[in-house]
Image (tube, rainbow, N blue to C red; front, top):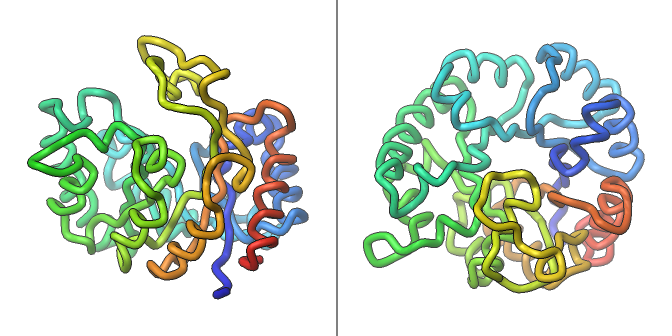
Amino acid sequence: MKRVPVAYQLYSARDSVARDLPGVLRQLKQLGYDGVEFAGFFDYSAKDLRDMLDKEGLVPISSHCPLTLMQQDMFGTIAYHQALGVKYIAIPYVDEEYRPGNPGFAELIKFVYTFGALCRKAGLQLLYHNHDFEFAPVSGGYGLDFLYASTPAKYLATQIDTCWVKYAGEDPAAYIRKYTGRAPVVHLKDYVGTKGEGSPYALIGKKEEKVLDTQQFEFRAFGHGCQDAKAIVEAGIDAGAEWFVVEQDLSYHRTPLEDAALSLDTLRQIGLK
């Protein structure tokens, strides 16, 4: 199996990161991770973060940056990420007004084109990190596909979150292959449960109408839920992924870093590490 490096989405251990980011980075390196993806910077300067990462030998590959921050300060956002040394900036989540089926979806597409072009000029690549709500119908297909079809690949690449693809009812491996050549960073995420009346996003603090019962849905370490881990990894490799990112929005029975170790064990067992 081709060697593809593995990063860890720091949102998965957000409470520990807020208390002791240097300690978390040290543990991730000891576990065997190659890099990290940020989800906030906890008031550190880009230089301080880069120094921490260099000390541990970890690569800053990307950042989940709130859409509102991108909209409010496009050039400042780009400058910070350039100083940090990431290659990718990802739109991590959009509020309901910007989702397919709402008037703001067209506004989102226009912004993605503009900001994606600026990112490319600055040597960065804009990504879009999906959830399941982008799989709403638009023009005879999915909203997510419409977004990608509406934006040149050089301005927007995918960041396919395999958990939400499966939760939406699609095959993650097939969906990754659909975007061969446009899937540089793939999120490896697992879960157990079924789609219910509530929202899984409410479990992680998003403002939704009704919380999905954890008896219906729980996040899991990669390879410890319903996902076909080997098929997903093979699809990512076939599609040209440059990085895999382990993400687990919540840990229930272990600490986030214990789950991070389990996910990495899965990748070792299937021959990636």
